[in-house]
Length: 214
Image (cartoon, rainbow, N blue to C red; front, side, top):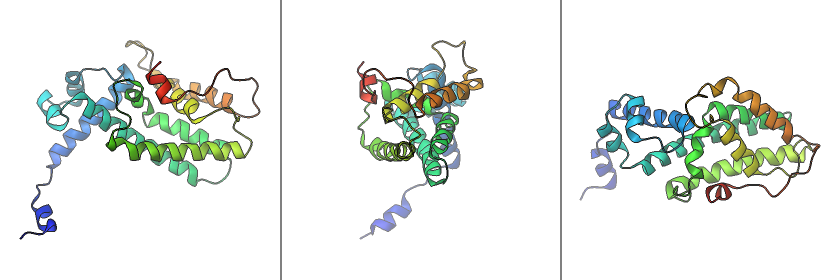
């Protein structure tokens, strides 16, 4: 009787070119979600990635699977940036600021599928990534809040939704050079988050669920 280890050894490893194609598809989808939104057609993603449609479907049976892979990859990238920021000593608000700017460079705008009502934010493949980023960013914000640097009425949803939206261009194709001014707008956002507050925020903090069902 074969052991589980022996069976695992017999499992074929993905070819290097197959792995590269998968990475190219995910990278192309990530950039196109930022530029055009999550409804971009799969054949356009294939064209951007330089692969055939069949290769896309061989890796991802449908758009939901590709969107989920992109979201997981971006969440993991952003989580790594948050971990680095938390590990830094010194000014708590500056650590939060560095995380915000780094997350923009990490294409956090590609999380836009999460705002769609059809996207399953509770899919098992996503839960660990979601919990990780939630905990890390809440930790960064709590540290800045405890230092008296972050206004107390700003919540996790305010930060993540604002950053996700500010790192994406306006609808259409005329604003694809958003990277030239996104960090300027993010700095304006961060200045508004600083304590002491200069105004009273209306309403309550938005959540991803609020945005999905608005």
